[in-house]
Amino acid sequence: MPVRRLLIMVIVAALLGVTGSARATVNDAALFINQLGNQAITALRATDLTLSQREAKFRSLLSQGFDLRFIGRFVLGRYWRRATPEQQNDYIALYGEFLLQTYASRLGGYSGETMTVTGARQASEKDIVVSTTLDRPGGLDINADWRVRVIEGRYRIIDVAVEGISMAFTQRSDFAAVIKRDGIEGLLTILRARTTKISATASIN
Image 1 (cartoon, rainbow, N blue to C red):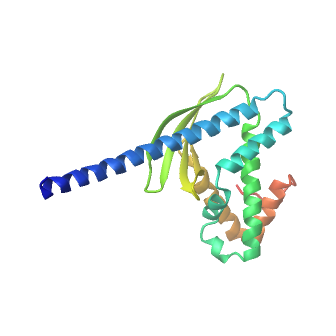
Image 2: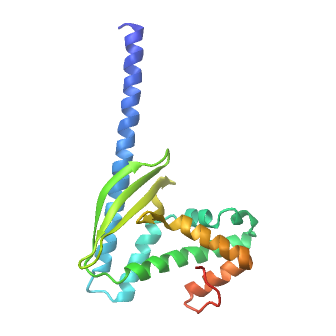
Image 3: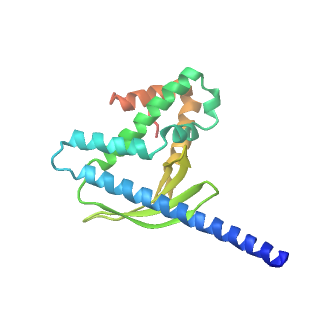
């Protein structure tokens, strides 16, 4: 076989291999979000469990699906390096609980919603965005884009954009405003109050 023809075949095979790998990754990410959504809805509609038990199961699924440490560090932004190791540890623990409580309280009141994966695309070299629609009986549907990345060999969610608004970027802006006003300890105080259901004198909004 001529060397030129062999070289062309190698290049084509390599390109096909990259494309096939990208498709497989996108498909796997879409499957991950679809399975996580179905498991969450199954947990929320479990009539044999109490509301607190359903929320606990739902929170467990969220903690497995979201990379809480990755999101927490991103949200803190440049202030992460300014925090002491003790503040960093406190923040990661508090932020993880804050995020889980936020989603559990918002989605815990299940009322017949169904989630459908409507598409998936390669957003960057590492990230895939999976688009979904939450069908709400008697209400407006909610569109969400889930940014997924493989971290330590597992698919993990690193951001959610609802109707085009990124959760991570919104919280990053809100947290920065709090830190500028009250410092890192002020943010920790607010997160501690939020996660222990104690009324805070300040607000993250």
